[in-house]
Image 1 (cartoon, one colour):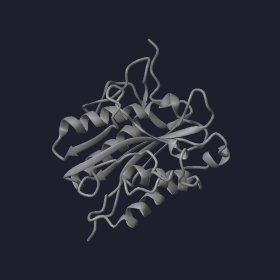
Image 2 (spheres, one colour; image 1 turned 90 degrees about the horizontal axis):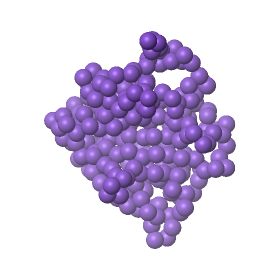
Image 3 (tube, one colour; image 1 turned 45 degrees about the horizontal axis):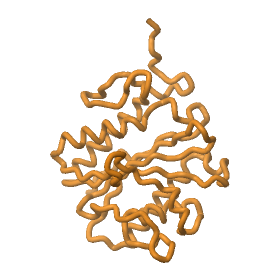
Image 4 (cartoon, helix red, strand yellow; image 1 turned 90 degrees about the vertical axis):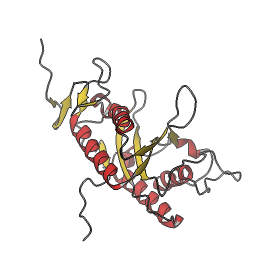
Length: 237
């Protein structure tokens, strides 16, 4: 039997994972379909989940995808992870301007994907927020005036992505942000997780692990394929 490689042949820093569980938790790693996963990404995400549970009694979690317009400059897309840094800065500024009673304490992971039919990447994002601050998505459809000016999480995310692209927050550009839907009900997928809710935190980790499949990442190109909120922070005095 051929031995499965422990490290990615194009990036020796990436450890590969082939098993249906990781540290005792189920992962979406079916043989001949999603295997292997990048273990580094599993490890960092699990650490982030554990920290989020510790600091939030309840967590609001949301999955969405970020796309580029067809005429966007590919060189600008592939320049490190600057576009995502800009997106998070815009979103933080949206939250700061909202004067919320509680800080959302934004936690997130993102992965860069290259689709099979396009040379342009897109980003899959998992956003986790303190549910004491935000616990609803709102309607991502444009406002009556054709802009994305509502004070909802959906519109703040859309405005932040279009701002990162230096595009106006106008319909139909909002379609560049896709909020995941349940294929059976058509409802937007969002999670409200209690700190003690082991079942749903385990389920969320399983569904998120699908994002870490190695075959769809721009490996060996000097392009960052994964990012997260800072995993290690100085504890306030």
